Amino acid sequence: MDRRKLILPQMLILLAILIGCTSDKEAGDKKPEEKTEEAAKQEDNEPANDKNEDGEETKNVNASAGQEIAVDGKVLLKEEENIIRVEGTTNLIEGTPVKIKLYNSPFTHRLLVYPPRDEEAIVNSDGTFSLDYEVKDSFYDHYEGQYIETAVEVEIYNHLAPDNVIDMYGENGEKFKGPFIYQNEVGSELKHKVYAPVYALIGDEKTEYTFKTPEREPLPDDYGETDIWFDADITDNDHHFLYVEGKTNLIEGMEINGRFYSDEEAYFSQQLHANTTYVEPDGTFRLPIAYESITDDGFIEVKVRPVSSHRTGDQVDETYGEKFKKMTGDLVKEVDDHQEIYLRLKPEGIDMEEPQDSIVTEDDGEMKIQVPDDVLFDHDKSNLKEDAKKTLGEVTALLEELEKNTTVHINGHTDSEGDADYNMNLSEERATAVEKYLTKNGDINHLNIEKTGYGETKPVASNEDSEGRKKNRRVEIVFQK
Image 1 (spheres, rainbow, N blue to C red):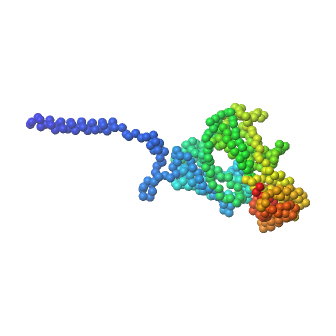
Image 2: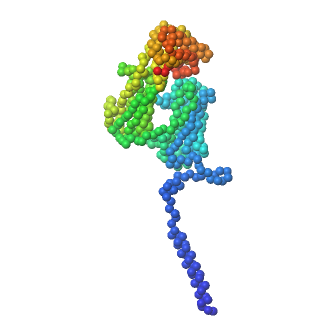
């Protein structure tokens, strides 16, 4: 056989083997296409897409890794149903547990409403959540005239949240971002949580409140330093509070207290308990100061003390030392065995003489003179007492100075004891008695006088105790100054 015929097939086989090896080597040496940093981040944060009924992928609408947490919605007071309804939307991921809590005295003690509990709603796939928080039958009567805080909170503690929520936001919520995020310590561990409060006045005509997104400012350059500055001013007031707002380089979560005193001689403040707020994450603060009557010589005391109720207590001790011994600054004062921050603010006077035995409040120019019923009337009567004439004489003098066509409202109020129709009639008769005295004994024909009896329908305090009922029995003279 011709040897050349045998060699040719062998050479072809060898050539094929060599070509195959070369191709494998080239394939093995080829590098995968590199991702940009932005693409890599997007892939890491991209949640798995859901599928619809047809098997098509759909975007998860409430994915929020790396985004600022948003909370929107409203709180509705449903007295007839004995519930507080919370309806919200958020970009928290589906399945996130949202706790709803109720606090009474939110600007003083801030205690959970009895019986103390929190309810839980779950974020749906479209980002919504809702809950009807059931309250006791006596809730709306008991807290009449008082503020209640309804708080939406998301806390990731003790691995109680679903695994995907922990993966997204961290075991301690450290991956949360945005203006709704706050720090607080649990034990000695620093936690981060979503916190959105709403403050509602029980018994007020307003029954729907919305969540508001805080507007954050840049942190101070010297945030957390021990040379303390504390800027504060009285920015507003209504018939319940004077509002102190400001900014400081104190760390987040520090407790700020305030009280209003009638004058230098007053040993006690007008309210029994101090009002409280906390330094916000950006160093700002807003402190409502309760008052009974704005007096010409009245003043506000604001203090920050080394107490155990700071929300970031271990950080506070580490930063400022035991009993604030590391603190310096113009407002830092030595008091007994500790240091504290102290400043005094004086509100503008009400520019009118306060009538005897009355309470005067102001809200954006609206003056309200409240006269307790026992100053004006005997129990269950609508005839003016002799002693009432001095107080009403001083009211008349104020009204005579008002501009022509000013509308003056004379409002009669009772507590809720007895029959509602009887109380309504009594309040109308008392408002009429005051109106007749003022018009007969003063030169107020240039004013528009309107008198109304409200009975027990507009309390300013709870009718469940004698002190509250006493506050509710009153006559108000209201006008725009």
